[in-house]
Image (cartoon, rainbow, N blue to C red; front, side):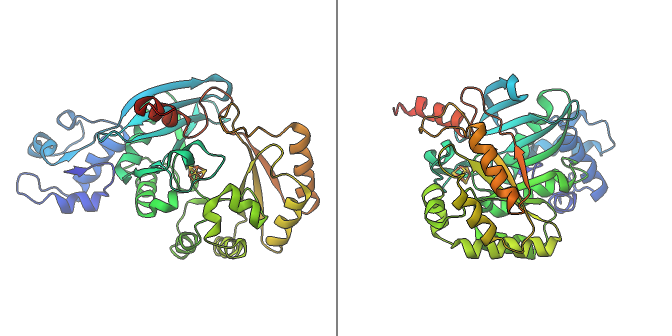
Length: 352
Ligand code: SF4
């Protein structure tokens, strides 16, 4: 069965070869636009011209199924709606519709995996472990489900939900391609952001492939020992190797590299961090996104106070490191990435 959420028009036309179903690439474009761009799932109703036999029999070979929405939680404080999806095999994953500053414009935060193998100590998804990778079709289907669920224009997508996107590299890049396609999500490639905790080989591959999407590398500590404690995957690649990969990406794109810094109260905002960060990226154009950790968490971590945040901001600025404060959605109950799936998994399995 072909999923219309993960094919290009060329691939779809090439896959439909029987006499009744054979179609031109132009027809394949119209079909995909109908399903992915306009979010229609009933092929027989297609208004755009596609030959009748194809409309009538497409459902025998192709599908545009969406995951079931198990929960939908509105977060008025952050102008966000969180969705918990369940795939046909029971896998749970999340997405978030996030209001942008512009009126009725939204971006969608997407998961790349059900659970995650990276085990970051401050992350609810990390505590779930990896259940499985999501397919490109599941990622795009979740995007369409969120986009079509409420009015407004969805103009961006960020891969910052459950999972490490570069651990599921091929599916994430395919999904991003569909989201940016004129017959797919119709989002500018520049409005698609992929985040990684720092998988060096994949950063190098992404750079060599000259992928057009924005890249964010989540650093959160520039002190090797502390970073290994917070992000166990850091044990695989020394910080100097990661910094070299980031520098090569910045050089290849001609743009500053974006580093995400998940700010944890009392943990990673001291002078030593600012100094180590400045040394590590000496001569490399970077900008730092400071992201507050979510509140109401079970792991004892807390949000940094204004004084802590301001002091770190000043320490970075004093060293010539530009800082942008990003607001994480998640001031409401169960709002951190992975918390919905975590609560539901716990409830389903009965684990305390
Ligand atoms: S922060 Fe991202 S990479 Fe780390 S465990 Fe959570 S989902 Fe995985």
